[in-house]
Image 1 (tube, rainbow, N blue to C red):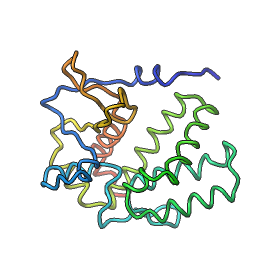
Image 2: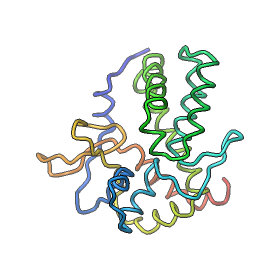
Image 3: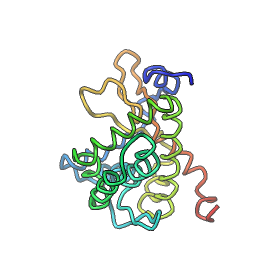
Length: 213
């Protein structure tokens, strides 16, 4: 199997966005105390957003698309990449106890295990195949979020004429596979922007999704 590096994949899927056309979303903005309406709506666009909705899947109810994303990776890959049933059950139980997407993403108990699974998956099937799997998972969970979260549907409709970009707000993150950063040299946002690209496809297919197709 041909192996690809993370950098090669990032370059392959990298896109560029003009600043004036972009609406940046990142749920961490809400956690910094910024509660105005636009920032709240941009938070709704994030996988970490936890509202009044619940996403049913696999006989369970998920409080955020981030929680479901973690769950899908764990149940599909943890055993394949070498974790035993007891460890998997323990980690899923903990994940399901996280009723807030921010805690799913930012607690060591959840994140360390999830990253271990994903990194082992990359070694097993290669970086590019893992990236394709990531895209498919994002598209799948965002279809469900669109179906079950009215706030999400309303926000996407409101900003349908903007380019949606997930913001990489960490100073140490020079490049994120999920989001975009501001490139001072190019004076553009650059990145793979996986979540937003999957979100745009979901929005384009919204009528079909609402018909249950």
